[in-house]
Image (cartoon, rainbow, N blue to C red; front, side):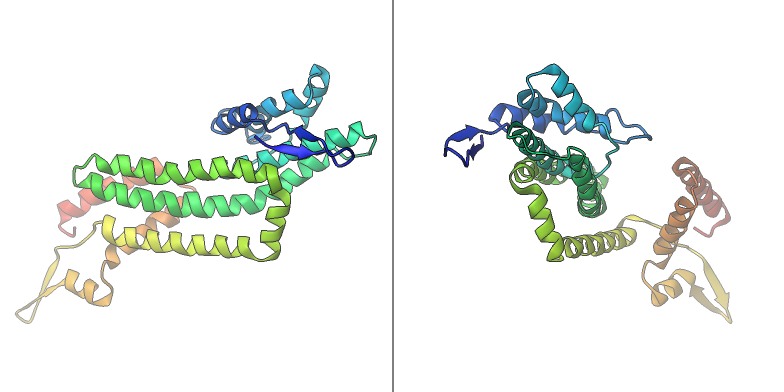
Amino acid sequence: MMSNVDQENGRVQESVMTKEVFKKTFWRTFPLQACFCYERMQNVGFAYQMVPALKKLYPDKEEASKALKRHLAIFNTTPCVVPFITGASIAMEEKFKKARENGEECDEESINAVKTALMGPLAGIGDSFFWGTLRIIAAGIGASLAAQGSILGAVLFFLMYNIPQLFVRYQGLKLGYKSGVSFLENMSQGGVIALLTEVAKILGLVVVGSMCASMVALSTPLVISMDGADVVIQDIFNSILPNILPLGLTFVIYKLLQKGIKTTTVLWGIILFGIAGSVVGIF
């Protein structure tokens, strides 16, 4: 799949990232959190991704085992962007092996240092874009279609979320192996990462705001008679701010979740609140 040139004699050498290794590594990125633990987070899943490349780099089982243990350090970031870090780690493992073969000194722990340095910026991008923006947009479109009884809602949500993240995984592994560390450094120095993160946050908030107005339904039928005139309470709310009640309900739920109240408790509270309001006649 990729090749390196030996600087001393000009020979072309096959890199560790062959088509077979690339394919195996790519598919191993999906069960990243299958063995998640609160002590070292995604470390086992990350080490599992490294196995195909480490087996090719280190035919000796003892050396392969030692290399694999290096990647059991704590690791945690957004799953969709992990292949980028995996590719960069494989490239560094290959570089260090060649350095040792040439008798050069190298600090193997710097691999974990680079992984740690990459986790934060990529998590910021991944969380903002995939969790905070793309998933919400896809869910909003899918839910609106599903509410109309169309099966396309589920299908569209699945495609809108998975096609971009599959593309990012595939290309991220390639890019990470070829120029992962330098690529991210250039983006950081140019302020691109900070800009992308901020834009993704703003877009996510805009989508959430639109969903509050279009998908949260709350109104009151209350009518107050004053001096022979009927005053519709809902019209007063609408004149102040359209959909102010759904917005207010959303903020209340957000605050409850922020305080650590369980989602199931909030859901039961909404159901009971709705029933009580309907019986009383305020909703």
